[in-house]
Length: 428
Image (tube, rainbow, N blue to C red; front, side, top):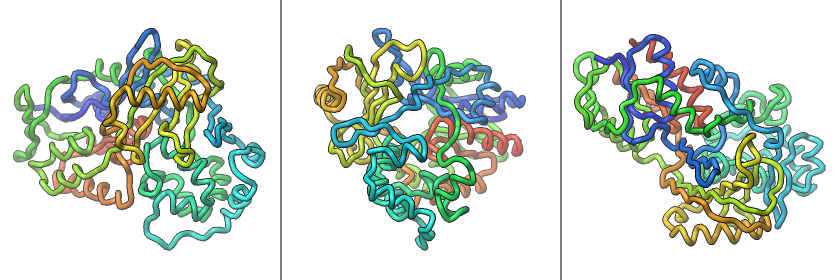
């Protein structure tokens, strides 16, 4: 009998599995695809290192500790990657990185800047839950929402600020208001508003991380788990390659797959998880022979009327990467139909808008369509947290994890893996 079966070899499952293995637990990882890593995939095309999923990882102390445990060395971003832009009225405007640059920046009007100064005096909302749009308009104003927060949300969630819950999608910001009554007061006391850490990747790209983790683990690729059921004091896993017994099961697959796997344990829960909406994203890799600005890249507010959500200057971010590679994003919750469009039409859109924005001509290298890319922590999302907790209580030895629970980023998944692994260790 296996001590722990981990179903899903994305970063969540692999991180939990490695922590358990390091603690001396007999772990077996099941993965239905040929490759591990989920959406973390890297491909080399004509000498360009193309990240098909997440482009970078924001590594804080917890993430760095995990990488040390895993025995893999990160590649740190160049200093110039701190430079970021917002596209506004035909120009790329640098994103302010300090209070002084904020007040001298042309990104916001004087009226909008003065509105921000009122933030410490805005009372808390009496509503139980607000969308990001409601929260930001109330505390910081419409213009701040349009040109700073909304593009940022597009970059992280590819989401709709009118639907995403501030409480669950940007919990850190929500908690600043709850704890300090003000975002500015809270940021001053904590000496930070956003998450801390350094941008990293790896020598062979981001897929090097799940690939490295998989080599240290017993990962059974191309083995679809068909059914998970409870039998006495253990679980029985029916897979394409046979039956396995385990004292505990960690389901680290996406929400829709988790729903399928849970149907023998709770049909109603399975249906609920199936309802979680994942925004589609189209990732286009292209290169140009023209010069591109220094920095990380730029975001495009929806107000500007472009289909491009944002562009990364991928060759600028890490040392040793072939030059002038651009990674372009389209789609998301505000433009989901683009994922169904013909590649030629997508390519033509990208070429046209990059010419308008950057003044460059590009050659398309690859178009990748993720029909279910990023789970959307929309209003009412708390019910999924509660459902996961209820299921785990009703079925001791069952543990749920993944980027649809408590954070969508790679760093979130790595951090959460510590808490999940500790709970598994307490059980077994």
